[in-house]
Image (cartoon, rainbow, N blue to C red; front, side, top):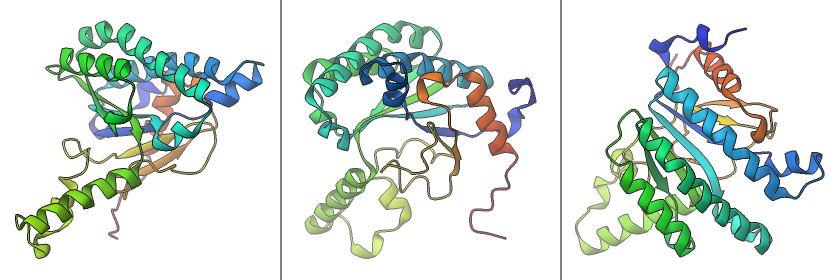
Length: 241
């Protein structure tokens, strides 16, 4: 079946968020260390970005590294950071060529200096691209993001620049790190796990959820298109009848 051919381009999600899960299990199945799965997961990211660009999805967000991931063994974390730096450096020219704008959300201050420098350089190089916005969530958790927003609002209330009665959904959203992109229409999680893992909890209030048993390193364009077709078969009511 040609999944891409059957997609209705007039009903595309404006924003797709992806929890890239299964790298460790994929590596274990092959008798390798977990980092081997992360290395092979880069191809899945590349194909997903290409697939989104080909059909016209304007926004993608990848959950790359959570605040909880810092608790993993130091060797794995260090290797992941090195891999991230290398991937950003290698992929930036192609992102620029394909009109992809790179953005990032998360606690950037917690990233190693070398990683942050490469990330900021790539963001600056691609900042004028308009075909596709790719956001990478690094050292991110939704609870951290929401608490951070609450602290900022509380400080402004304390300073008298915001009145408590002025706090509504629109104001609160402006303090989230995703304030400049629409909320995800579709959330994809690979590897068969049925949980959200502290990712965009406020933003996915009415997102459609799609879970696939495919491990992330095996995720390809056809799987991305399958998820979109499944999304297009659903009726979205946003709490209405």
